[in-house]
Image 1 (cartoon, one colour):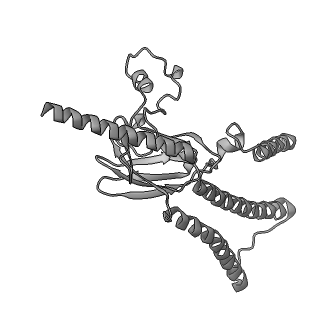
Image 2 (image 1 turned 60 degrees about the vertical axis):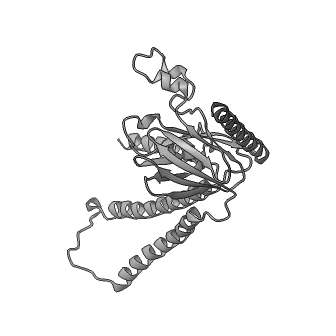
Image 3 (image 1 turned 90 degrees about the vertical axis):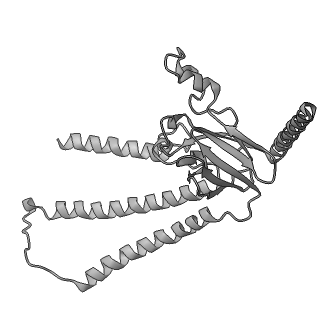
Length: 288
């Protein structure tokens, strides 16, 4: 019995150590159990706060359970221990076990408050995008420009999700997580999102950015993110608020480009908008 318990304990300890020692990448056991580090300035601060609180809790757990196990083993009946029914009062002990938790809470609250302040600090943003949620799509408007478009579920996913479509969803790349027009932002730039909705409550959420904000009709929420300059690429998320029957078909895709590539993309979109407006004006004049 004791040998079995020792073997089980050793195996468990080895598993825990293997998870802790695993490299922090997408395929490691630790990263699957833990929250992602993310690719933005805020996500790293949130992850750092999370890990600090986690290790505080681990240390407290080891201390409390270690002391409890020591007391159970050392003062068990088989060793002749006898329960003392008399009440023992110690003012000193009460002061100590009050001051220590207060100190721990202060040590946790100060960095937590700093991160919360940083989350709400949207000053000095270089790009502002208005995000409007609909059932079941997103509209992105780049303030200060004429660029505005809708982002909806990609055609391949939309076709495969239909009843009796005959399409195997596993054959569709990024099934239900792809869109026709992603949000495009530059890396290394502080981007502010002004988030609202036109019908019901939605939520804009990209896990790798470490942030989520509700989109509420008649109200504008604000959030910001700054993707690391070397983390260009495509990042995926979803509406994180139950918004109706097709809630599961409202993905979010963000393309993060270099500053130069983003400037070229934005200039091309603005030129296309102006060209379309000019063509529409010419058509109206011809009809008139």
